[in-house]
Amino acid sequence: MGNERLKGKTVVITGASSGIGERIAYLVAEQGADSILLARNEEQLSKIAKSIKERYKTDCTYYIVDVAKLEDVTQVFEKILSSGKTIDVLVNNAGFGVFANVIDANLQQMKSMFEVNVFGLISCTKMVLPTMLKQNNGHIINIASQAGKIATPKSSVYSATKHAVLGFTNSLRLELADTNIHVTAVNPGPIRTRFFDIADESGTYAKNVGRFMLDPEVVASKIVNAMLTPKREINLPGWMNAGSVFYTLFPRLVERVGGKAFFKK
Image (cartoon, rainbow, N blue to C red; front, side):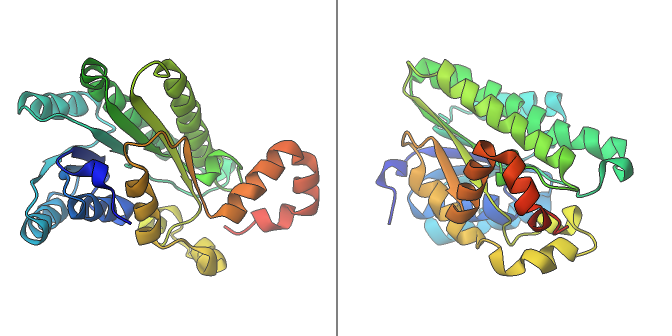
């Protein structure tokens, strides 16, 4: 089903060079929206932007940015806004994870996860908020994770970053409750993307949960269909979200009875 609300709108997507960020870029263009792609991989961004413009005849521009570098985020968004573009939707998709026990975790990687997953997301949000508030319209979509609802072994720091994203998203939604700006958290389980090239170098987790992995096209479609609507959360898959709800209510029982299911990494 198409999203007619997106026609003529501008969607900014971080982490747009691969995975669901890339798929979102194609899908919003299909709905007639212009897109602005942000990521570090210039070669891939250039290829995607060219493909989108040729296929859908919509405007698609890109900027090279590492969202962990707050000064770079400021400069890029100042360029976007000074170009006269009105940002209607921001998709904070950039993020990464590394699976390791706390005792084995690399301190620099831990710091980097927070810089990208949390501070990068917040800085991008802060850059679009003044314009959205002025126009009293917009949508901020933060890609969190089911890991932000239920933590498992070897994902302590990654889960902590996604808990932070959920906390930030829920607070922001309340702060903007009297405006026409929507705020949505997206909480997917494992998605079949290159995320696991870094997160799971051993391949153990991907092998153990391969049959449960989500199709990035399905996740991207859910996100695009929800754009410019007051959707509070998108939770995928449904059964995993039900498990996180049950865990919130009965954590000790879940850890005792279903604890073995957590050790997939």
